Length: 302
Image (tube, rainbow, N blue to C red; front, side):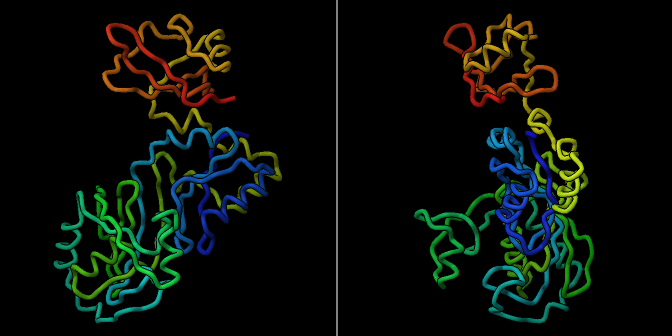
């Protein structure tokens, strides 16, 4: 079994806990995840299995979608409701017009400070470990993109939002910043990821469902292939001779592919090398001085 299973992560488990469960269910050690979810968050967690782990660096996970529930009138040290309350205020007096104005202000490219309770490392140490010791260190603000920020419902002090954002966005920080802008504070009460790049909640399954599929020898049927998840890359088909050459670590010649000419690549171009619906390799094409193309194999798949 090689590829990706999309797990609907339950509340309470870390992303690493999910990886360990998948290892036990599928009986393999070569398992990894992309896009860490906090323990209190639920939803889409892509888990790579065996050869799928080689595809992780080439995934297009630039866009994430979340359902977020904010509680107005509270500020915590973790920026969510699992943390220690630092300040409280009345979160029931915010008008709909004011909410909509703040939502508009936080749509587009914004500057965001990563929370102390995060896996970002400083001097080799995850920030959350320092935070648990009561330490606060200086962090660099990041530019992130909020493609869409939609008010789904309002039942003050609770506000439900749908967030479409770039990779690296912290929805907890977004909630905290919006609370500051509203003047009453806010913390994230619930968070559910419904999409991460090509992986969606509609195509996800629970750990129990994966266990059942494995027991019924259906696990491979619910696994998305590396070829499928890298569908955003240009595809170059290979002949039988091309497959043999690539799997021996050598770049194919043009006549060992199914294309008439190499694609133009003013900048390096990452492509799939495939046969049928099977991924053989990921390669990078770049123009040589004068004429011709240089092909560098990045990952070869068995």
